[in-house]
Amino acid sequence: MDQLTSLVPFLSGYPSWVRLLVFAYFVGGVGGYAALVLFAPPTLFTIDAVRLTSKLEVGQPLVLDVLVRNPTQKRVQVTELRLSFHAGEPPTGGLQSYQSATASYEIHPLDTGKQLTVSNGSEMLATTTVTFPFAGQDYAEVSVPVAQSIEKDATDRFRLKLSTPEIPRPNYRAVDIVAVYNGVNETKPFRVSLPWPK
Image: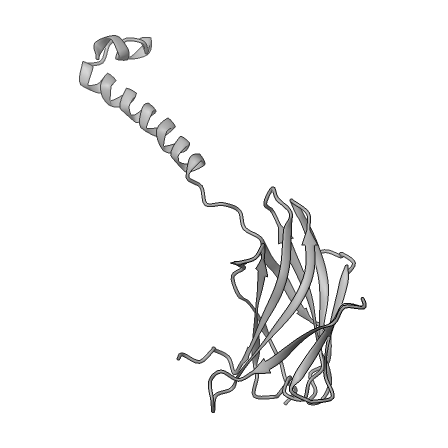
């Protein structure tokens, strides 16, 4: 061990145990840094911002402007947005920079009243429904099928326009938005307050 610690000439006047301690500290620091780099959590696709761009009125469409970021090194395909409306907390049981929107998804009721159509201006329409999984509680969910492809290390922006008699309602004070991407991955929920006029 003395041969290793003697490689540091300015420590030659110190006892062996001091030189060994300094050497171990250096090796531990380099090893610790390498471990941090090797085992760092992966960068994840995220919802960066959601902005309410419509006036909150019962019977009027709810329009949300969504900005997403893909810091990964692979293209991300967003296939679904899950919206959870609630009174502040789900029951148990503005944009930083300008970017033009690449798509606008409009959700309208069908003639039957229960199903909603989702359109992004193309010929293909998808259907979805508003569900109330917690009976008697101020909670509703909407699953919106989308088709957004975000290149690696890029951002994207799109709009959701929800026109349905069930939403918005004054008892819904917030909406949590989760993006489903690449099949099964989900972003962390992004919460948007719904400031109803008093």
